[in-house]
Image (tube, rainbow, N blue to C red; front, side, top):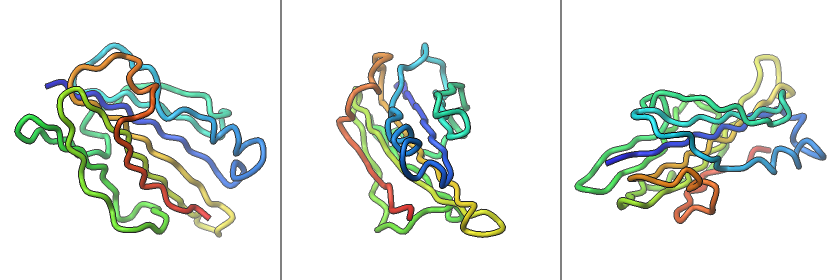
Length: 157
């Protein structure tokens, strides 16, 4: 069965934590139009503070995406991975995996906070959004609201 993965990463620093820059950051989409399908490839879109949050699209090997994908008797098990050394903000217990039937999709969001070497003045942040579909999907599928949303965003302070 075909699996479609879109990984959207938004990255910023404390300079985009308020005002106009924060409004621009908060307006970035969580999903984009998909390119033509390619086997074992994820559609990666990066938006960063340094380029005005302009989307930059590329392809990444599916195995490099931090999402576990496993076919379990005709359903796709989806679980976002988190490296324990990553800058996770405090949050409650992680949610369980999502199991998708053919034709379904999920949007899974995680945010991170990292400090610089010198002090907390160098904080940087990113938001990872994983849009995952099981089975063939329309190229505009991830432009709509997800039927299933796993929101693991925590407070970034």
